[in-house]
Image 1 (cartoon, rainbow, N blue to C red):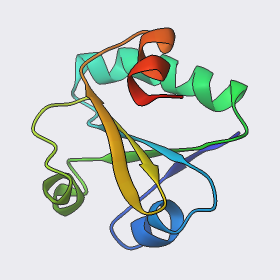
Image 2 (cartoon, rainbow, N blue to C red):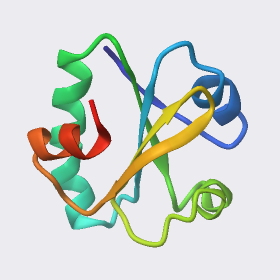
Image 3 (cartoon, rainbow, N blue to C red):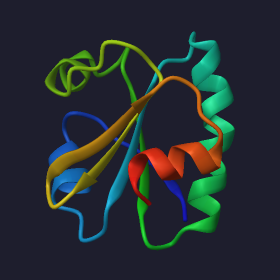
Length: 103
């Protein structure tokens, strides 16, 4: 499935009102661990069609980062039914991330 880039303008519509669980990768272009995590996020998006995968650039969307208390990146959150259910901070391999998020 395609990864979507989300902004404050469409976050509620694409993430909180989604009809499937949504993994949101909070990242920044200057973040080394975020670049490593991008490969994991890409692999999950390719393999899973039962979830939506989204990315939020925290440099561009500081308000969203603040709203979800993103203090360190990468932070990956799992949203279900409009609520942040689980989150993970720092680089993780795919199996660890899936386990941490309960997928």
